[in-house]
Image (cartoon, rainbow, N blue to C red; front, side):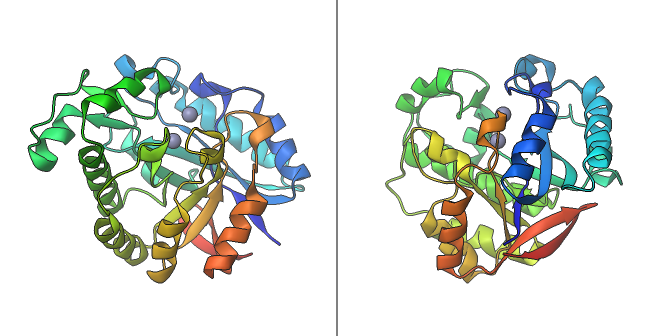
Length: 282
Ligand SMILES: [Zn+2]
Ligand SMILES: [Zn+2]
C-alpha cells in the first residue's frame, strides 16, 4: 500500500516541536512513501507571533526542505509546500505560487474577520471581539458563545467556497475545521458542501483527510465521513495529512483514515509535484 502525508509543519512556525529530520524518520519508519512539508506561510506581523515564519524566512525554509529532499532521496520522496491562509494576507508573496521549487499549496481558513461576517449575511449577531478571529485557537474559544454557530459555519463555508474558486490551491486543508472544539451546526450545510465539491472536482483540487482532528476535542477526522461521501459522489480527489506539529504524530491514525476512505470507495489518493496533482494507488 502507498501512503502519502502532505501536511506537516516545522519549528519555523514557532508552535511545532522537533527537528524536520525527526519527522522524516518517523515517516520512513511508518512506510510513508511521499512526505510533504507544508509549514504555515507568513502572516502579517500583527498576527504572526508563534504562528508563522516571517517573509524573510521563506527562502531559508525552502532551502532547508530542498536539502532534506536530496539527503533522503533514496529512502523517501519529500515535497515542498506551504499551508496558506485564505482569505489571503499580503504577507505571503504570491510569486511563490508560480515558483518551480514549490510542489503543492494547501489553502486553509483559520481566521474569520469582521469583514467576512459583514459581507456574508449582514448578520444581526454581535460583532467579533477582534478584527481577525483565529477560531481554531483554544485561547479565543469563548468567542463562539457570542454568535450563532450556524452563522459562523455559513461564513466559514463561504470562505472555503471562495478559496476553491480562487484556484490558488492544490489542496483544501481540514475542510470542516469549524467543528474543532465540538461546535456543530443545527442547519444542514450539505447544499453548499456539494457546490464546493463540484468545483473542487472541476478544478482538480484535492481535499485532505486530516487525522489531527482525532486528537482535538471533536475527536473526529477533518472532514467527517459524511462529507467524504459527498466528495466521493462528486469525484473530488483526496490526499492524506496528519497536520503534524511534532514528530510523534506523523502518520497518526492513517490506518483508520485508509479504512474509512476505502470503505467509501476510494482506491486512489493524490500526490503533488511542481503543483501538478497525480494519482497514487492505495
Ligand atoms: Zn500550526
Ligand atoms: Zn491548518
